[in-house]
Image 1 (tube, rainbow, N blue to C red):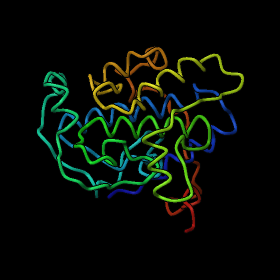
Image 2: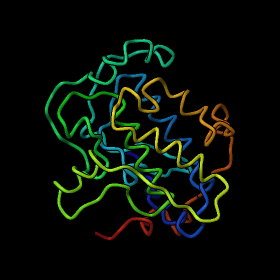
Image 3: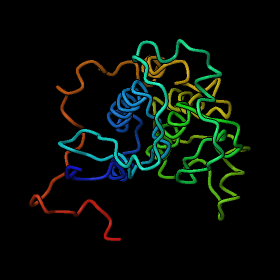
Image 4: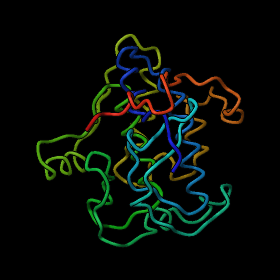
Length: 227
């Protein structure tokens, strides 16, 4: 694995100093494209979270595929032409894997799961970047899972003109039923949401990154926690 300068969790920390949804858009845009690409090859990551989004030359790369599963490979344009029941129940094992706060309800309930669990995790990540905390929490694993299954989300961003759009996209990404979750019908539905539709998804590699790690040397690990 090549060396990456910083985990994307640093973007979340920067966001807390500048709490405006637009500051998280660059990360969101790149992560949507990364997940769309993985899904086109049948890969379901199953453990998306900020520390698994690495920053290389200012752009996001998805890391840690230890829990990933491989389903049927389909061209990006054809992924969601199959029945939503298949997309949401592609895997039938009863494994409850992943980092507790980012696990989708259908995984916890052991009713089968598929690509939409990654879009759920994206919703959690965006919420965390905008607020500084995850939407579902608890003291124990059981409490966290109960919150994920039963609680609704609320989003409070002060001085934000994009508040309603941010609230709406996360409400749709964090729908309890994967059948109705934003992304199950295709990544283009996410890209066209009012919160993101003004972004340039086609020329991403030519755009100036919002955040570039400032390193003293190639061995500098200041952006990583010592533990």
